[in-house]
Each structure stands twice: as structure tokens, then as C-alpha cells.
Image (tube, rainbow, N blue to C red; front, side, top):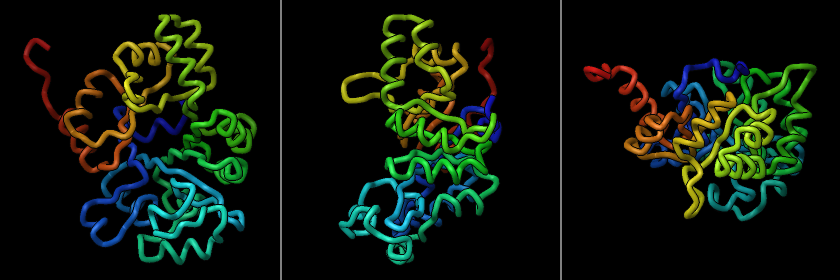
Length: 266
């Protein structure tokens, strides 16, 4: 088992882009900010899911969107702004945090880093290399994921990783054919499947696909689940992790389930 998975026993709660409570949002705090990561940590989350891009002057920053419009109102792409410009824009929104700062400031947290831009893959990987035991490195683009992983791997030490879209599609094809051999080939080198419950009309996560992943030693984490009842259903199915905007709610769900005595005869 990769050390990333040892921060807590499953089910795991992954704080999606940190934690921004209603009170925080009213104060202007935004996702992926220093304040959001701090809030997730303070709530008791052991895992923070985040994303990274590269600024025009080559700094890897925690940010999801390709541009700044939704979060700051500035229409420019992140690749066109400097670290200082982005820091100024984020100063009243919870504070900018670079990937290096996140890893160094929160040594007790495990990070799940999604590389959103091809230009960020190698720089992010090089930063992560010194912290590989507590990072799961991924990307929807499998080629980008592999590029980042190569940069983050030193000797036998590597980050954990979850499947990109192409790998997930191969696994789902294997699951539909009930072929464990095909599924095993699809998931070589993969530690987790991090997927939505559905993609449009197509169901991605099912009890059968979870059992198949587990048979291959691969965890299943579902995003982005914000309803407590849905969290409980997915946990009943056997998912190993919940990626959520409301980590405080998910932590309560997990704690309640672990403290509830089994039913008589169960």
C-alpha cells in the first residue's frame, strides 16, 4: 500500500478544493485558497483534493479553472498572469497558495493533485518528488499524468496515482465484459479510481465495478458528493473515498457510521 493511503482508514474524506463554509463564502473566501486548505485541515480532513496550473513566470499554483473569471472576475488565463498578479487578486479571497507552499505548510495533510495544464506537469512533478509519500498525483489526461509521474519519481519512490479518463474507459469496458484480466491490464500502476457516480446517462460507479476494482487492489473514490444521504448509500456500496465540497458534513457521516452499533443479527 502506498503511504498516501495510511493517513486514515477508509472510508476517506477528500476535501474538494479545501473547505469553504457558508460563513467563509460570505466573507469572500474562495476554493483552493490558503484559507480553504486551512479550513479543511481544521475540520479534521486528512486529505485535500486540489488542482494546479502554471503562472506566466513558472510558478505552480493551486487553481482549478484555466482562467480567473469565475473565481476573481478577471478574464485572463492563469498562464498569462504572474505569481504576484495572482497573489494580489487572491489577497482578499483567502490568499493564494502555491503547490510548494501547500506541501511545506501542511506537512500532516495528504494532497490529491490534479494537473490541469500540460505546462504544469513537469514543474509540479518536480515539486512533488520531495513529498511523494503523501501525494496522489493525477490528471484526466493520462499522457499528462504519466509525464507528471515521471518527473515526481525518484528511484523507487513515487506518488500514488489515480486513473485518467482513457484508463477509466478501459476499466469500464472490462467491467461490462466481466473480464478481470482486461481490468487488471487497464489498471497496471494505478492505485485508485476517482470518478463521478454518473457521466450523463452512463453509470460509472456500481457495486459490481467497486468489487472488481477491489479485487485488483484499487480503491474507488467518488466525486463530487455533497448530499449526506448519497454519501451513506455510496459507502454502503463499498466506496473507499468521498470527494466533497462539504468535508465537515462528510466527516460527520463517516463518524456517525463508525459509532453506530451493528443491528442485532447483523
